[in-house]
Length: 101
Image (cartoon, rainbow, N blue to C red; front, top):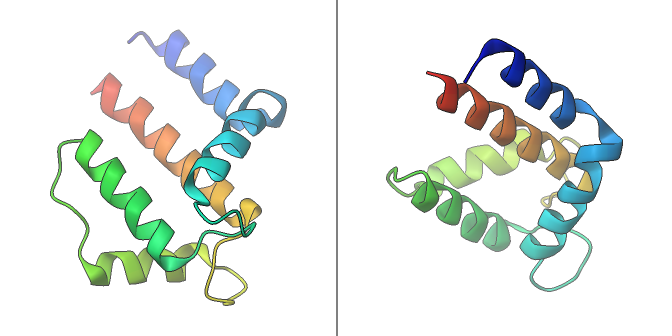
């Protein structure tokens, strides 16, 4: 991928008007019980799916616990939509970096 295309993709990911609706859809898909939060079991399912799609070993229980702790910035034991945005943006930016290496 040429540097200009990479720059444009990064700009779109960081633009809330473009990326926000995608995050909302992803959050809704991950929030299996429609509680408005992603609990640990839902995060585990999401992370396992991501690892599978990237063809890397599934996350361990410890990996899932660490990711929950990292994303759960208010320490309530679950991930809000705003906290989820950090995960999705990180993954999208990581994907762009992988595609360009």
